Length: 168
Image 1: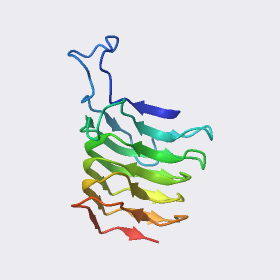
Image 2 (image 1 turned 60 degrees about the vertical axis):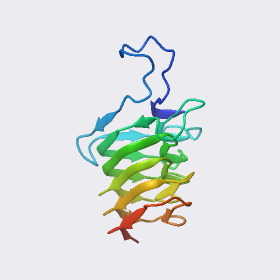
Image 3 (image 1 turned 120 degrees about the vertical axis):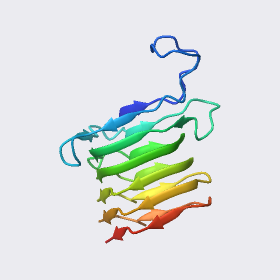
Image 4 (image 1 turned 90 degrees about the vertical axis):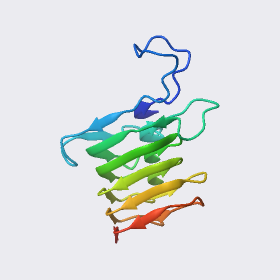
């Protein structure tokens, strides 16, 4: 369960009003009014994430792409495992997002060509962790403080840029 689910697999669905056969590449622009003004909040300890970029069976990472999440607060309320659970995205940017109180990690990213920039990440298990073999992940100019574990963990991959972050 998530506050907001972004599905990556709409194949075979005709009830979404999006033209064409399958909609797995439909992108989301989620723009708030500011990091403290627009909030998505976990309300149950059974939530995997506050924001989930899901993917359907048989789809590889990168099937959901070109998302933009900007200027909002993702509050895990010390209930949700992740603020952002993204097993199937690519070409996505998270910018000026305030993440607070996720039990395991603020961001769990798979895929490639994803950016986390100018975010404020507080009081989470980790700020960012990757899965699979990420390619071209940029983590830049973030303010990270009060992590319960390792701030940033990258599991393999290549072309991963981590620079200009303040980690306390």
